[in-house]
Image (cartoon, rainbow, N blue to C red; front, side):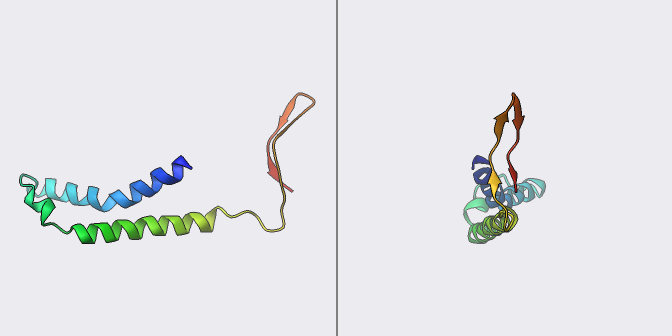
Length: 86
């Protein structure tokens, strides 16, 4: 679960990181006015779109196989048998 939260935070912050790099490379970062009057609503919207897209992709990819039953890991005769689908 922590991985999912961290990935979503990273996806949301990508536009802000890109804007900060752009300000630094163009030497416009000396004034905080660029951040206050900058494209904050656009950065928030793009960040939300990326985070929502990440959640949609996560829901698409992490589905259970249809018709399969999960058998949890077990210890049989001293040997650990990992969990699997049957």
